[in-house]
Amino acid sequence: MKRINVEKCAHMLKKEDNILILTHAHPDGDTLGCAFGLCRALHKIGKKARVICADEIPAKYSYLFKGVEKQEFNEEYIVAVDVATENLLGALEKDYAGKINLCIDHHPSNTGYAQNLLLVADAAAAAETVFKVIKAMRVTIDKQIADCLFTGITTDTGCFRYASTTSNTYRAAAELIDLGADNGRINRAMFETKAKTLVALERLAIESMEFFSDDRICVITLTQEMYKKSGSNEEETEAVPPLTRQQEGVEIGLTIKEKTDGKCKCSIRTYESVDASKLAGFFGGGGHKQAAACKFDCGTEEAKAMLLEKCRELLSK
Image (tube, rainbow, N blue to C red; front, side, top):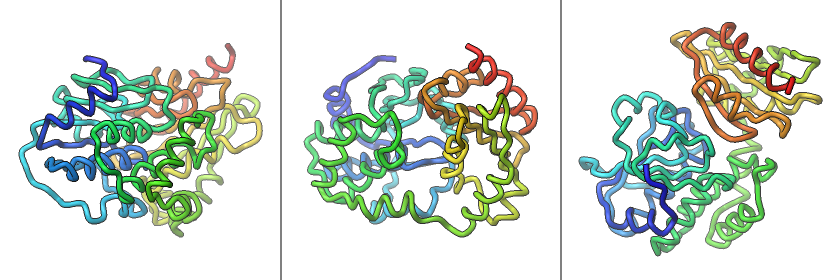
């Protein structure tokens, strides 16, 4: 693995063609905003590029790829955006592990799996760095690209509420608004509009809440039965993990999601007293200090027991 800077990254992308862009599984606004913003930029300079994701992209993000030409080609250069570890690629891992030429990321826990890594760990969103790369490529940023990158920034900062948000984040967002990003519409779609199925799932999630260690740990368990009852699915669960951290006195919030095969994954949210990426790292996952994730090859109850044990260890220090 070779660490590179923004200028080197831009040079490499301008030199290559037939570029495949990978997002992480269970995609969020940052990985998708980066991917489609970069894809649109590459198209503007005559490059062939396309985006793939292991999972279905939630409908609320459809504007990110509206009008993007679906290009067919044999990929020659593979780029991963906002992907800290190869196992976060989901079903794509088996085809692309060990083959990724470039990764653009902001997770301090990035494992260095790509041949070349552009990592800006103090960026609140990977989209901040992709924005710099596109500018370094001398691409004229239009409204569609600006919308993609603004989406990445606003979703990964919780609409600029998280502690990871810096003055650079605000400056990047302001510049994107000047370039045409529809911040009002995007923030409404991301934070103020919920499908009825999601509202039903959130109600069940709140009812499932459990508290441990003098209410310092909050756990939500999302089961396949809950998805069935609410009409929702895992693609809609992006808004659920923050609920755990909104409870007074909670320092660690765990959202454990049962998968169709009986295994599960956990989304971790913490405040400054606990490093979420350290907790996820015990189980092969990663992320940021206040937001991270990990996967388990077991059921939700067994995963919860293991997580609680490590949570108690971290809280006792």
